[in-house]
Length: 312
Image (cartoon, rainbow, N blue to C red):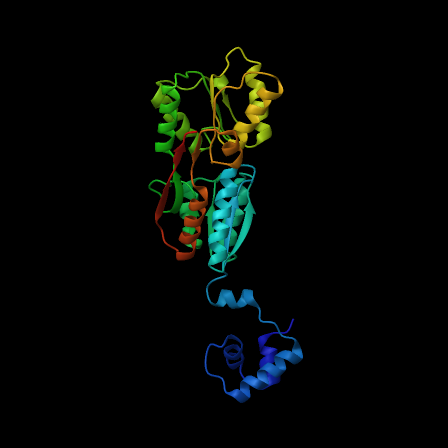
């Protein structure tokens, strides 16, 4: 691959002069510019954008760590990041983690090596303390409330919407609530918050046999409903972690000619709107856009986005 030094040698000018001519970053005489352009055409020289960006201290690349794209939380946050990055002429690199801590540490090392200008963690397996310690490598943004850790963060303020949702469910007279989650409360701050809000509202924890874990898709919701219908204890209301998941739950009851219990979804998806389901919109696209702006600006700030209970 032709280098800028080879262009300079053949043109008879210094590499600095050639660089100024290519990047239009300083004075170059018309004679020198013409000669340099002729040599560039002769050698079919293409500037090394990566080397140039690194010399300027930026790559215009933002890495986004995503465990998977099976749940609308991740697709909506990622779309928000992508839209904001496109408008700002940044590239977005999708980094799948599968909740593997070693993979996540590898992405932190790539940040250390300047492969990215910043990393956005939509979710994580490694502790927040480790992310905070890695800030010396470059900007790190998380999509959850980091508490006292000195991390930039954009996240949905879920608590108020969860409180409103559970109070509404309670006011309708429902007492045996089925709940679906993607991960256990030991691993997920969202699950912990949901369970804590439930306990505060109803005065007790939900029945263990009415809590379904590992639920992220329509098919998972279908399976959760199948499991519940084999139990002695049946839910009289189901609070799901996604409208598509709620649709999967509903479909099992419909397919087996069973009475469909009342349902609430989350994320205000098309499926929920078509079925007329109450839902919680966490405005995750706004969260994603805010996370990108924090990455691009290198600000260490918190940007909470209010969630919204939508009753239908």
